[in-house]
Image 1 (tube, rainbow, N blue to C red):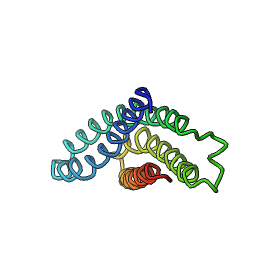
Image 2 (tube, rainbow, N blue to C red):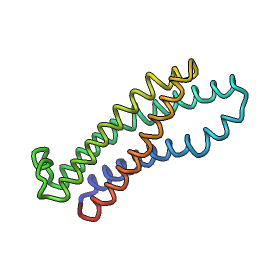
Image 3 (cartoon, rainbow, N blue to C red):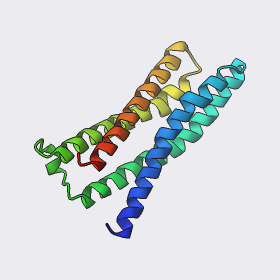
Length: 154
């Protein structure tokens, strides 16, 4: 594997770590702390951290994951047409991973640019943002599992 391939894979892993790590931070560290604060401060904290994370995680991170993922797929010798080959376990797992990534990107956009900024307005937005955030975390963890499976051959 050439040094450029190692660099691109490293960037891909770092972006994935930031994406999943950020979501885990929000769920496990930020949310429990912020819920204990007065409502006005809580709303301000969620909105401020959410905007910053949306920029780095969604606007920067997801495109980096997509670009490096396509590059990595190419270096593994998998073409887009081969992704439809269910006889190849590697291509089949990668196919599922790509679909879950697309779903994650769509849900992240809905969460970060529609529901999240409105979550303080009413309970419907708040609950919807929370549900989509949790679903996206679960999808992200599943994508990490599939990445590990790919590393072991598919």
